Length: 371
Image 1: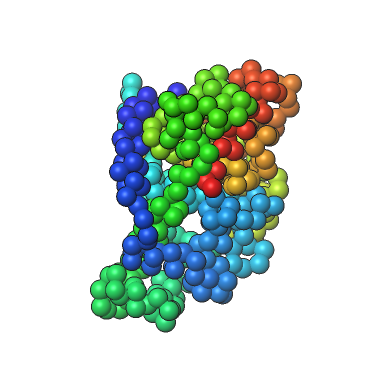
Image 2: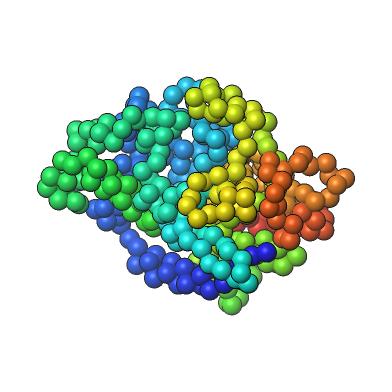
């Protein structure tokens, strides 16, 4: 069951996108600073990993190593527990919050698969100090590196003279600048084939933009396949997510290298189960009711951002779409869900799509890649 009030939220966010991107041009000083921070490989310990290492523009701002289900940190043989989500269009997510409908609570917004960060600024603070990612021992290490960087003057131009003196304040500014870059037109281009189609919709030119197969895929996406229930395609510049949390019934990924990490980083080893929002530790969240639920990701740039789902179980779109279509069909032989509670059985699992229809949906999804 989905929160129907999300439709209003999507419309508001779509209008916001229209007003914020229509006038976007060159990067502002804060966005330029954020870009320099985003690509700086000196901001890890040891040096060698930046935000872009796991969120590469050439790969839809996701991990360029598509042979791994999860991202590798700056240290050899150290891996995070989840597949890196795209940084593109993340800025359109509202702060983590909730709403009620028919006495049922729905959580939406926030950042990370489990929603543990309220917003993009809070998210940007995490990887620097994560021992499985950029591995800095503390904020001091990060800020000291920025103080001797080529862009230290720009930092003080943006935030004022002496803005690098206080470590906590400078660290907060660093995250704010990165979030500003991730909110820029350079990251959120809305330049896909589908955007071209939307711009021409209602005119004769629109008929020649999508192929027959892609058009069929769009019709299925909005209809029989139920994709738009969680990935709305409406609005002037849709971001193809309703920002809510769902358990799709994705199986455990036996190839996840996180299972093999030392107990200091993964005490449960191969018995580890990713509880998603239910394991985020958020105050007030009913852990049992939200167990296994992951944030619904944007589908923009999905053709560039393999592998898919929180644990990288699916290596291509064809298998992912087939899973959505047939997860609940016993003869398909899908493994059991990683978390068997709270699985969404209303909007996927036995959609009755044939091979031609599955291929058409994949074709449509590939029109969402920015160009």
